[in-house]
Amino acid sequence: MAAGADGVEIHGANSYLVNQFLFPSTNQRTDQYGGSLDNRIRFAVEVATAVADEIGADRTGIRPSPGNPFQLGDLAEDDPHELYPHLVRALAPLDLAYLHLAHGGNEGLLGTLRELWPNTLILNRAGTDIATRAKDIENGIADVITVGSMALANPDLVERIRAGAPLNTRPRHLLRRRLGRLHGLPHLRRLTRAPGARGSRLPRALRRTHRTARQR
Ligand SMILES: Cc1cc2nc3c(=O)[nH]c(=O)nc-3n(C[C@H](O)[C@H](O)[C@H](O)COP(=O)(O)O)c2cc1C
Image (spheres, rainbow, N blue to C red):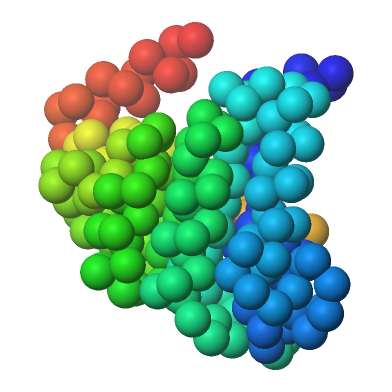
């Protein structure tokens, strides 16, 4: 926060530490942080409480991953239908800025969590197209959607979506190489050179956008 960030998102997803506390497959503790549902969510709730106390609940978000689309190591979700509602019920009174779900695919569970969460719900459906994600806003299941690799592959993503233009393919190879080795990025094409757009005239709205950008 001292460096100028607007907030902190607690990474409770993808088999990292907070996530590991949630399920017996990775949490074999016998103290007050392991065993019962209350005990397994305790670490996540305590971390969220501590961060919110420090910087303000309105600057704190948390990101669990029901269905865990990026499972690493041995984590298996033993009782997701009991655990995640229990976690979200316990987080709700903290009045955090948002809950960011890395959604692994169980629509029933997603609906339950939506009902239990009173504040902004951010949703990420990894690997799906933009139309699929936008439907979550239209249907009211999410307040905000996030895009990861789609934004990495398309430096002009917003213009492309506005113009209904084709998107560069998601760079799955970047995910395999892991973050920190993003040397593939400079080769990603802007819209003027996108597959399908090459040699063809751009939509009028987009030509205007590009002219304006060049004039700046
Ligand atoms: C290049 C790249 C590296 C990533 N590295 C991590 C990581 O180290 N840890 C993690 O939890 N998620 C990582 N992710 C996953 C993202 O946090 C996010 O869940 C994912 O990109 C969402 O799917 P989407 O890109 O289809 O929107 C990475 C994603 C990409 C594209």
